[in-house]
Amino acid sequence: MKVILDTNILVSALISKGYPSIILERVIESENMEICLSNLVFEEYKAVLARPKFSRFPAFSENVTMVLHFLKNHALNFEPIEKVELLQDKSDNKFLELCLESKADYLITGNSQDFKFPSFRNTKILPPKEFVELILKSKY
Image (spheres, rainbow, N blue to C red):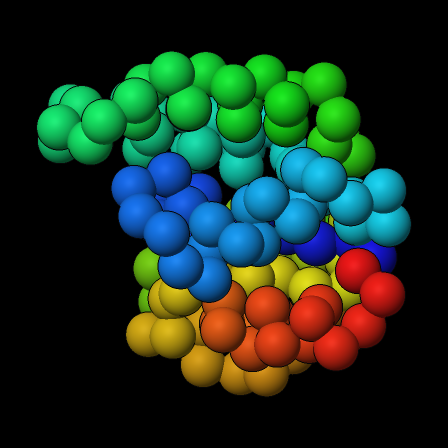
């Protein structure tokens, strides 16, 4: 199973326990789940996770270092060729471009404002709760 995590999933997973943290743990531990990345998505992860406002959370920066190291060394890397201009928040189009290039099975996002559709080409777009329910029912 190939998955793409929107940046808000990583942020949520690193600041509190809940569906996003379950997803991140599962992605890290599962041999059957692969996270898909592009340089643009990874750069966004780094920029957002480095924001000073997150430093108030215990062990946040240490956990960010570990997660980014894991992603850098274990994610499937893609460089999207096809440009997408679909979303109102133009900076989020990079996630749809990654969907196309990687042929990911799922894009997991908490951003229901921009990602209002259930799928993009062959990639299903799910909020964290629905993705967790899906993986708990399956072998992942």
